[in-house]
View (cartoon, rainbow, N blue to C red):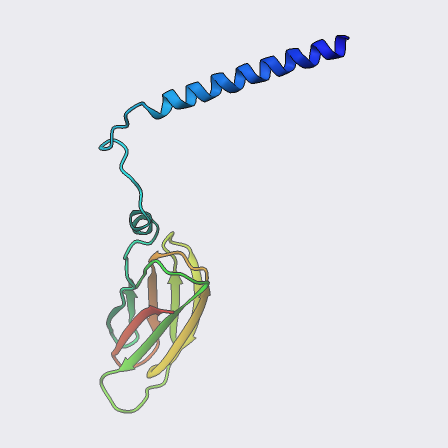
Length: 157
């Protein structure tokens, strides 16, 4: 007998809660919404905030013989896992490839050294980065070449 009364009591409480919940939710849908305060987000507005249109911006400059140069290429937002930094230095005073090393230090947007490599004049050098941060990188070039160089640094996929 007690079990039967308990079952009926629980059924009565559950049905009362169900009816109360339905009436509250019906009342909540009738409350007007201020559209100007709550703009509707569409897929276009979401994509604009997730994928800004900051592009890869190359940088180039002239390095004096046995000199130093700083370049600031920008890595834009991207989709994927790797990006490649292409660096090349062209000797501009003669047609012969001069001897000597070019030491290149790459600093990330946070200012930390992320890569070091050595290359030569009139030679393309590619450095592949896995999941690099978007932003402005600082590329510091120390030339041990006896001629002026035109240096370029650019990001690509």
